[in-house]
Structures are given as structure tokens and as C-alpha cells.
Image 1 (cartoon, rainbow, N blue to C red):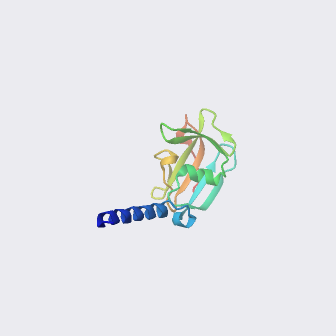
Image 2 (cartoon, rainbow, N blue to C red; image 1 turned 180 degrees about the horizontal axis):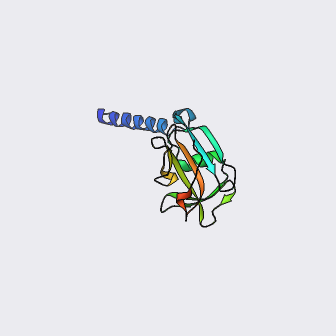
Image 3 (spheres, rainbow, N blue to C red; image 1 turned 90 degrees about the vertical axis):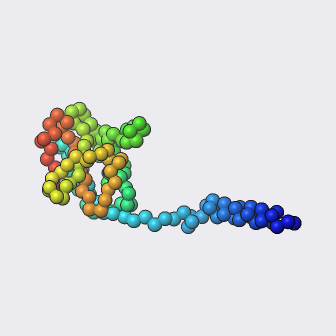
Length: 151
């Protein structure tokens, strides 16, 4: 066997070994440590009693939509629009949108001490440690009258 042929066999064997290790189904091989953050959420309907969910521990990188699913235990209704890669929330905890009332999401601004509308869709907002979010059943014709509980 020539040295070139031996080198080809060794390269092939190394490649095969690498593929076997890389494609391993071992759960241990796929585990990646994930950090967590703590955040709070208020769900405030027009007539329902406001509900606080404080200091909820969630994986780092969780978006506001997924955070809402966690705190409501999936008790929400939404439609996913692939062209926007985002959900439109139609109902939370049994209270569904009835025009002109819609569920809107807000974030507490620590600097100003005020609630502000989330600047992006909830699917695109990554919740950070210490964030306080609120879903409010809002009259879209009278946005100035939104009154949310202070954290």
C-alpha cells in the first residue's frame, strides 16, 4: 500500500469518526447550560381583578409573548402571522378582543416611572432581568385614559 493510499484511508477514517461523534444522539452531548432572568407581569382587564405575576424565573432570551404564555399557563388566544413573524393576541384569561377594546402590552420605564407601550411586537421583545411588563385590555379609541397599577 502506498503512502498516499494510506493517507486517504486515515483521512476517511478520521472523517467517519468525526461524523459519528457529531451526530451522536446522546442527551449529554446536546445539553447547553441556559441562564435565567426574573421578570414580572401584570394582566389587567377592564373589569377583571388585576393579576400580578412577580419575580417569575424564565430562561434568558425568552420573548414577551412566550413570557405571557408562561404566566397565563397558555390561557390565551392568538393568531400567528408568518409574514410578520409575530402573534396578534386576541384574548387573555378568557377576555377576548371586542372592538374598540384590544389587549395591548406595556413596559414599566424605571427612569420615568411610567408605563410605555412596548416598542415592538411581543415576539420580538427579549425580556431582561428586572423587566416589568403589563397586558392591558385597552380602549383603542381612548389610549390616554389607560391606567395601570404601579409596580
